[in-house]
Amino acid sequence: MSAKLEHLSAQLKLALGDGVAKLEQKLGEITVEVHVTHLLAVADKLKTHAELKFEQLIDLCGVDYSDYGDGRWEGPRFALVLHLLSISLNQRVRIRAFAADDDFPVFPTLVDVWPVANWFEREAFDLYGMMFENHPDLRRLLTDYGFVGHPFRKDFPMIGNVEMRYDPVQQRVIYQPVTIDPRNNVPRLIRDDGAHHG
Image (cartoon, rainbow, N blue to C red; front, side):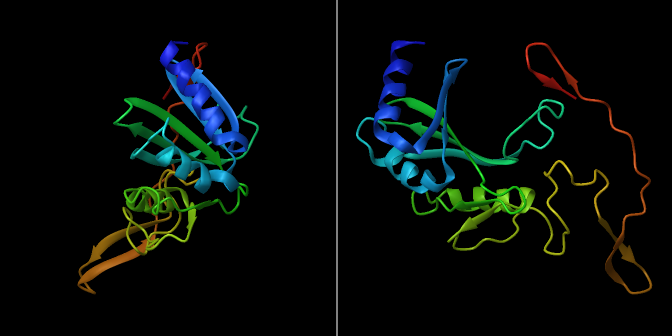
């Protein structure tokens, strides 16, 4: 590990204390796993602490681990992942927090810490069904308002649940159950080095 990453790791452990569940360094990047109950406090420290200054949220996304590692994953299903940048200190970090409940994944909103989180959280809600407590406007962002389900969940059917088409008799777009035959997908390959293909 480089001296810069060593220093950042030490500062993260010192500043975040009990909020850190796990800290690991791979491929020149640091990932900090955070307890979801501490996520809001940790986010505030990451942004304001003099040795961290992660003033920019680059990305916030959801992850569904339900079939990760070809079904060998043992642990919570849904995670929220943040990528942060400190412009003033030229450093980056990845933060991951797992939802406490696989059936109803809930996270605190980070909009008050990084306002840009607004649309990222709406995307995670729309695509993964993740809820964000105290979000100012949590509604679908990419799918239609009548859309059924959350398409990035691993258990979402590849052909979807409903389809829409123009009905010339009614002279409008209508929704109906999917009429496409289910298809077999190309099997996913897992290489020895852990990289996934397919």
